[in-house]
Image (tube, rainbow, N blue to C red; front, top):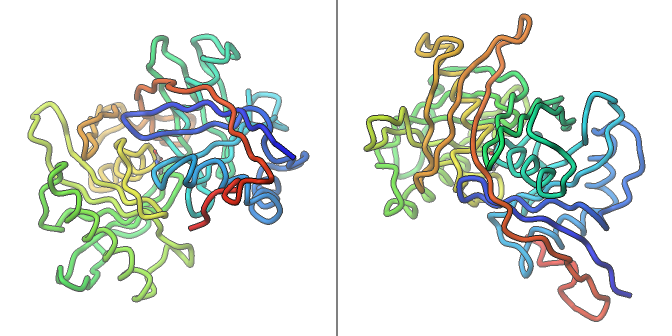
Amino acid sequence: MVRHIRVIDSHTGGEPTRVIVEGGPPLGDGPISARRDRFQQQFDPYRVAVVNEPRGSDVFVGALLGESDNPLCTASVIFFNNVGYLGMCGHGTIGVVMTLAHLGRIQPGVIRLETPVGEVEAEWLGGHRVRIRNVPSYRLAAKVPLSVPGYGTVHGDIAWGGNWFFLVEDHGLAINRQQIPALMDCATKIRQALTDQGISANGEEIDHIELVGPSPDPEVNARNFVLCPGLAYDRSPCGTGTSAKLACLHADGHLAPGETWIQESVIGSRFEGRLVWQGDQLLPEIIGTAYVNADSHLIVADDDPFAWGIRD
Ligand code: PYC
């Protein structure tokens, strides 16, 4: 038997998103959290086939487009990666919007998307630019001390931006491409130290590590290096990570609602971020660009020993 899965690839600031638009797992209907659980429990091989080697890589974020129960939402989206499922994904949402534009399913303007952690607003601004209004972000704890083998004690803020982040400034490393091996080592050890020392976000795993530092460009507010759950680093400035950072800045009195924050990634791609009031909620907004770079059919054939990908 041969299955075909149609996917559309894009990248947002260098970080890839692969959207399943046809031939995905038959998750049925019901609340998105139940469909995400069904994906994980009964159809996980689709995740591995789509984003892992040999078709993908550790860097890919996958997105399954589906119908939404909510008539106000254009679609539902379940994000996944090389090791599991994500609550939200900022760069991925920007990629999904450009994918919907590529398919001719949307025109420039505002849409709503349903994700497992809540509804998000997105606006195709025309061209390759997209604005997303994320779920509410907040800081849970400030300057939590953490002893990291080889690095001494560092301090991190625990913050939610649609995923859980540990944001560290006192890591002692420059954030640039040449330092990527050192940044990987430091962030991986921080992640392990959180696990070893039982530090969580009220019992939930903190699975994203964000190292923050200055950019050489005075027009940029900060650069980051974000380690994702599957131990790949985000090539984009990370939409949920930027959301978490905005929440920390606001909590410290360093960012007023409406003020712009330019966040740069370790490879130099940029997001424009700000916090905006929506009713009584302060929500993070991110503007970024994405480019569709493939529209293809994956072939999953029974006689291929790695048809369903290489599981991590
Ligand atoms: O942009 O939110 C994001 C993200 C999460 C993981 C990779 N990118």
